[in-house]
Image 1: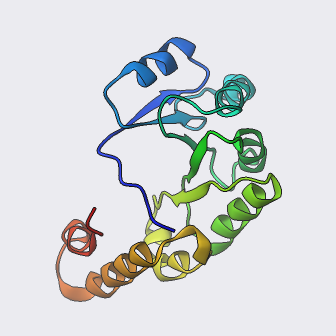
Image 2 (image 1 turned 90 degrees about the horizontal axis):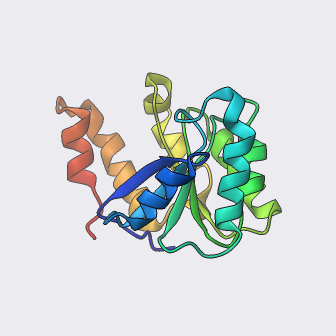
Length: 173
């Protein structure tokens, strides 16, 4: 699996049609339909339905969806709803355990989707578990990304900042 590197991603709350249209009309390389932080709890179902409608066919730009966190009780329904042919990958927030990735990958597979899982590590527990997260679902990470992540993990004890280590381990385009 070769990762596609986009120069820019533009997030848009999936339930705000005007903002989604602006995102697709922008110069951003890819669009991320947001079901998580940009969507109030009372609008989650509306956002999920809007994203599913967009992804039922091929949107004009590569499209990703930031779903709700694995522990939210909304994640599985989000993934199953948006697993249409237009989905490039789900962005899985607040990942700190390997089973979060395995569950998301399984839900995509059950829906017949070829989309990937991009993890968003947002806690110290997630950083501590990076080695386990990198190997949680091998088909979800290309060889180069997995090796880059392993190099980053090895470099964390070197006295350099996390940002410095991650920049050094970045996979070239």
